[in-house]
Amino acid sequence: MINFTFNHIALSVKDVDESVAFYQKVFHFKEIENTASNSKTRWLTIGNGKQLHLIPRPNFEIKINKAVHFAFSTADFDAFIKYLEDINITYSDWNDIPNKVYIRQDGIKQIYFQDPNGYWLEVNNDC
Image (cartoon, rainbow, N blue to C red):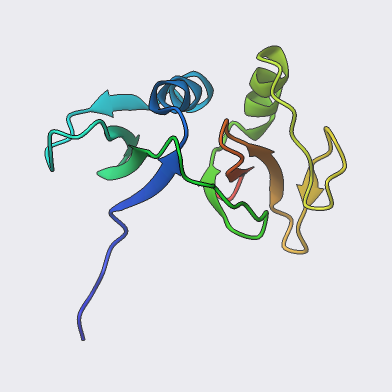
């Protein structure tokens, strides 16, 4: 059996500088060197050797769907919600009710919000 681990997620973005600023402001991700090429693609570390690659595609149509999202977990869930409110980022539950936390059947709390390109992000307390 071949084993796999998650390495990175890559997103097409309209404005790479705006997207880097968003992910650094919201999640405090640090920028790391793009060792793959000399392109304008920028890499951020999301911890534990995992990365977020932001690929500039200013002329591409970006299609979004809430069911297609990626999620981050934090033990400081309530503090993170307060932080989002402090920096004026609107969040909602799965049913799009603004400023509401969704509680799954297993008791995990989660919220959803979008980045500058409309990609959906989930933050939960499944730590």
